[in-house]
Length: 297
Image (cartoon, rainbow, N blue to C red; front, side):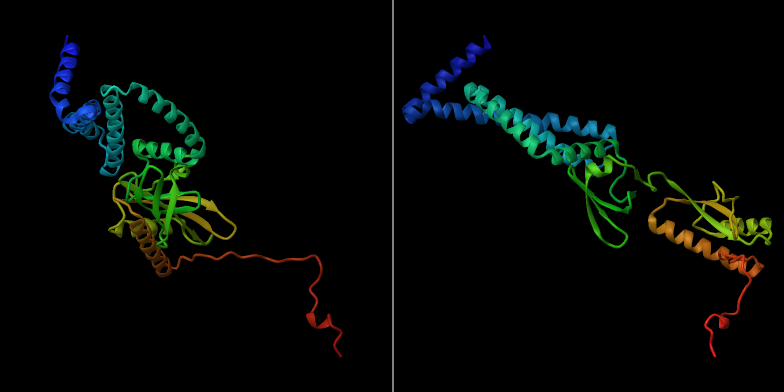
């Protein structure tokens, strides 16, 4: 019944405008229907779909950098659907079938030509959904490290600590192990202090712990700890384990450097030595004075 009423309205409108447009009346009405449906889809998207998706993003806790590209993709998909519906409403089903055939062939060709781009795009989607790292995080992968400056659906831009900008394909960050030292609120640091075999292990352990407790950058809970981990060729290895809060790479480097320096100064004051590697050279033959080698007069 509503379809009959709609057709009658179109006929009535056509009859009203035909004296003004003449032979172009049919085309004008089709264009008006197309634009009207497209405008209606756009308004529905802005008034209904976009707010609903925004609330869904809020529930998922998506960051702003993740929202923007997803919202752009949603807008594109809604407008594409709107164009399709508008063509159908305007009576261009035959054109739509031809367009669908061309689009399918073009998609297949483009898919083969842009395999790497598509692979990086899919990897970018995983980065946005899994959130292994965020903008501002310090990450390490392979032999590279730096601060994440930007994340897009194709590449991630990382600023190294030498102030170099790396443009990394997203696939490289999802197909291998990526370390994110600042993903949690705290970071544990380890450092091995080597002391001489003749030094007092307990006294050295107390110094290492005391200097950690004096540092404002090192956490009290979890507290610092020391373990004897190595009996090397020239030293006894005492591994110190300390924690820092709200870490960044700058904090980590400075905290560790200040701590190691303080321990070294205490070792010097207490007479605890940090030995350097030593080698003993021996041979089976008796030592001969070098002056006898040349046969000098």
